[in-house]
Structure formats: structure tokens, C-alpha cells
Image (tube, rainbow over all chains, first blue to last red; front, side, top):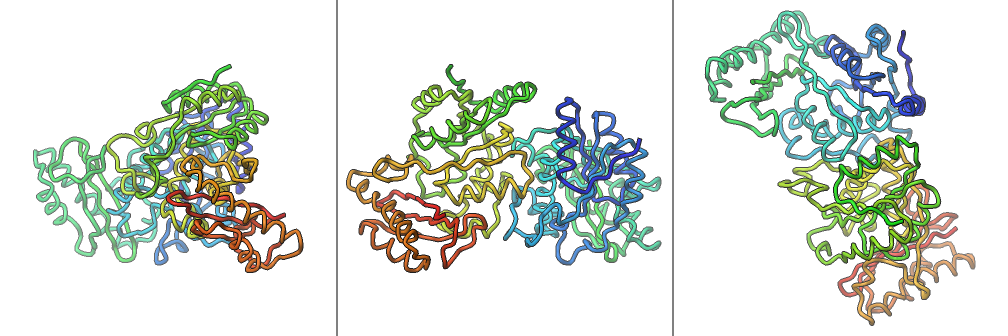
Length: 287
Length: 287
């Protein structure tokens, strides 16, 4: 059966109301489109846990900085819709920015209500180089949660900081749903899937491979008993291709989001880099 | 029948779940307790529109500034509960600050997710003299909305700026409820009911009467054809008792919240003053 493509909030709310009346479990997979196997794994997981699945496809302007890639971010709604059909999603919700934020408003905190994650969660890692990004993410995710009213929402672990922030938001604001984190999906050679991989030239694609190599090196050393993060940091950096500009490589407790000097169980090791103009992130969890 | 007093979020959510299953319309009256006839009018309105009514009683620490009256704010939970019984509320939800915000967290935006209304709505009137106040209000109201999941929430028009901000928040974040504004309730001599009236000495109580007198003077002049707000402003000020310190007296379009120089229909005329240490607000809508 094919998914229904909806562009309007009211249409979605009306279907959701019916589903709630029928006591169906609803799953939401929030995406920015340009769907790849990583997204597919989220949709499959949602299908396995829910009676109905909504995939939202929305390149959210308020989470992009002025010099970021909002305009060139890949938009492939027909392919996305086709994948959602194949995987058995029920609704593909693809609103316009006007539908989501209204007309004649500045897309900023002068004119719009924002959901703002705690500074301790955003004044670091990706939040540091992308000011306002996570306010935009938390705001649009809150909107999607209110529109779809899901029992479960599915997020990839690749955006690890985002996952922390969304889980914290759900807890802090007493939202009525459970966040289901899903593992990173990689190319066979190790590169983490990302819609932004499409920006890479052939040469850059080769350099990008060293990102996951650096993380796997850390994992190998950790399994051999190395727990000092400064040693792990240096070893990882040595594996990065010289064309890569490191933004951060951090070790954080996966439960508390606190920085750690010594690895213990459940340590998130997260990296962000630039290759040419393309910004990529990746991470592993040391268990 | 008497209302159930609940202190824990999970207890409320569990009752709400049952009510939702039974397809009952739920009304929420959010209060800080110290209930008076103004609150009673909200509860009565809720009873008239809903199958079940929840009254929340919570003096919300995050909406008070460091030099404000959080500690001395009147707490009269037994009397409040009794009034709720009389009026037929179903649940009185009176959580502790720990229950609402968790333990071992700073009650600030370093540690907690906040809902932040637009600057254009908070950088004026009460928001100007109470920085952070409306972030605290929007955050706790969002939490209460998520806990109680009401179809309707009832707010007094006395806190006019709060009402604007909450309505804007519901719209911006696509929340699934309707805000019902309820008219100001006054003493027979005109003073707007407020839990903070209990702070006033007998002398201050007499001075306070001139607040509503000033607003009624504006209404009278407007009915006689005066629409220039600077004339109305001066006439109102002349009626204020000399012991009163004016914080603001503003004229705003009741639909757009824009300042106006000439009164047209639906103009909010709002005033804030200090009498001794007590801060009071009042308003009228010119129609």
C-alpha cells in the first residue's frame, strides 16, 4: 500500500485524531528528506513497533545558520515518497516553511515561540559551531510531536547531541512519548550514511573514510585496555586524512552527557570535521 | 463530590489516560493557588464546558525573579482544595518544585529546557520589568499542558500579556487545545482581584482603588469620543493616588498586540504599578 503525501498540518491532525480514536500506536520518523538506508532503518523500526507510521520530510529553515547549506540541502521528495511506500509508511508529511511557521513572520525569536534546550547541552560540540541550531531543532521537533502526537519517535544515533537534547526536552517538558534511538548505518567501507555525503567529490569521499577509521582505532585501543582519552585522542587524530579539518573529537558519558577523561562503560566518542565545504559528523559508543 | 488532591505527575497522567479512553472533554485551570473569586470564575467556566476539570496549584519558582515574592507568595492549599471541592473540580494538582523540575538541577536555562516566547511579546510591559518571567510561565504552562492534555485551558484576562503569550505559544507550537480567556473579576469597589492584594495594608488598599478608577476614567473618555492615547494617558495618571508608582500604562491592539496611538475597537489598556512593595496589574478592553 502506498503512503499518503500530506502538505497541510490540519490534514495530518485529522488523520491522527481518527487513529487515536481507534486506539492505534503511532510512530513518527522526523527527517529532512534525502532519505538513505539510515532513514530506512528508522522507518523499519517504527513499522515493527507501531500500528501507523508518519515520516515527516521538512528541511527546517530555523535550524540552519545564515552561512549554512539550507538552500543547497538535497530535496528529493519523489524518491523519498517512493521509499516510504516501499517500507509501508502510512503518511509522508511534507509541509512548506510557510505551513509550519506562518506567513509574514520573521523566522527568528523576535516573532516566534522557541523551545530552547539547556545551555549545558548546547554550548558544546555541534552547538558551539552552529549557534541557534538546537533551538531550531527542539522547536520543530516539538511542533512535529504536537501535530503527530506519536507514542514513539525514532531518531538516529548519528546525531548524538540531538538525541541527548530531544530526550532531555521530552523529560523536562513532560511530553507524552518515548524516544527510540537507532544505531548508525554505515557504507560497507565504514562511512556513516548522511544526506550530506552527496556533497563530497570523489577525492573528498576518500578522505571522509578516515573519519570512521579514526573512531574504529579508538574502539580497538579501548578494547585493548587504553582508557586515557588524551592517548585515544592523539591516536585517532593521527588516522585522519590531512585534508580534513577537525572541529571536535569529544568523549562524553552516554547517560549524563558529561565530558570524561577516562573511558568507562557507555562513553560516547563523537567527532565533527570539515572536508572542503562539507561538514560531517560521526560517533561510536564505547561499551 | 470532592476533588482528588494529587501531588505526583504520574498519578495525574494515569487519570488523564483513563479520561481520554472514555473520550471525556478535559479542562485545565492553571493557578498559583491562593484562590479567589477570579479563579472561581475560571473553574465555573471550565465546569460549564468540560466533562472533567483539573485545577493546578503551583507557585512556579522559575517565573519569579531573584528579588521577587516567591517565598512570601501566599500558600493556602487547604482553602484552595475546599473551594475546588465546592465548585466541582475533579483533580487538584499540587506538585512540589522537585516533582516539577527534578532534583539536583539548577532551576535555570543552564540545566533545563525552556519554552521562550517571542521577544516582541516579552520585551515590553510586565516582561520588561520581570526578565525571564514569561519564559518561566510559558515553560510551566507547556509542562502542565503535557501532563493534563486538556481540550481547553482557562486563563484570566487580568494577566493580559500572559494571555497573549500563551495563545501565541499554542499557535506557534501547534498545541492541541483551545485557550479560553475569562473576564477580570473585581471587588464591588472596582479593585481587580489578585492573590497579591493580601499584601496591601489598609492605607495601600485605599490607594490601590485608584488603579481601576484610572482605567474607568479612560473608558469614560473613550465612550465620549476621545481616542488620542496621549490625552487618555494624562487623564488616567491624574486619577492615580500619589503613593502609587507607575510602571507602565499602555494601549495595545487586543488582536495583534501592537501599540496604538489612536484607540480603535478592541484596544487593551493595561497598567502596572507599585504600591509600597506590592506590584499590581489591571486592564480594560475598550470595544
